[in-house]
Image (cartoon, rainbow, N blue to C red; front, top):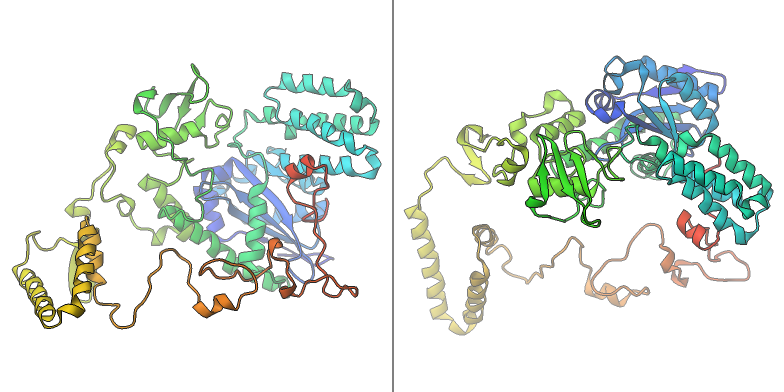
Length: 561
């Protein structure tokens, strides 16, 4: 922390962030940085420094400043660098990462270029296209509504040009375009952007380890985590409280995420681009060139083949040539069971142990055999060329309960030989004799129940299903309980009749902010002459694609920089 005239500057690097620095190789390749505000009463700015991973964005530092001036950010970065050692940025130390991605904030980029002169500064293409669309809507540009789409797609085509030669041809065509010539200010704006083409053109990033990360979405998602999961949509009272929330809650959030991915609990990342699509191809269509290099045929272009290096995570297709996850890496990982840092779930014990180490530290992490599957897939032997250690009696986990030690494997007692127990067989026979005697006493009452029991028993075909049925037998005697499937909690039957909003079935009403589709008088929003409870005015959509398609303005989610 450092005291300045306007307030204080705080630089933060927690133990979890230091472990991300030293253990995650992506921290030395690429860093994302963005600022957010409205988190405390004094409106301090919070800068999040992130790197990417299959588990999502991982924090490597936090800066808290009273403003966004270049001098203030530079002093905050100097404080941040003073806490790091040579293991930072995966061994790069003071050099910093290879690539840094931000939005087009002049003060931030100037401070970063002074602190990390060897890093390549890139622009988020979404924020650049969004700023260009707003420029076309500005009154100073003097662009009529009918020409805005055409002028926007000129720059968009330059952004997605496949080569630098094609980019130059598109720029020359843009300078001679009649619409562009009729708008000299837009023409000058495009010329200024072309001079900075190395910062935003995708064809100029082919030799950089961006791994198909062309936007700053990791920072946008992290800001939502800060405001929702850390601050719970409430402002901190002062900077000290804001810092306490970041230290206690932010680390806990990313720790839980890393542990979920290490244990292959992927409910929250099921829509991630790192999760392979359920597409399996024949193993004969994949040719193995070396230990980690494969050749795979294209599924959409006949006669085209791509070379994939699973160890590096690179494919020769247009998606994976910078190291990002693509469908060809996904097909190899699913078909041949090859471990890859670009694919989830993680099926390599060392990788899972690494993620667990980043989350909790090396002292609390079990050995790599803890993360080995009990029954490895035979396809792993074909895909990796080496066999994974199987779960033998020597690698079983020993559970100690009081003074009794019991070895278990997949929930089954293996301390005794796997033979039928005569005592249990006699107990089962006694239970059925009891049911038979009761049926003889009251056949009319127990007849339908025994028929239902027999039908349920016939439907059970697995040992685990029979085990579950026997463990729950008799626990729901007495008042009838209706078991429903799914994770939603049912409501009382009388609550449905009291509802004023149409919600079918036994589903509950959502709480919190009222959705846009539920504007109704019951919520107090109705059109009145006084306007006290008038329906709020709908804001412009946040989607840039929707704004361009409908010739509408794009909403502002934060102040312009």
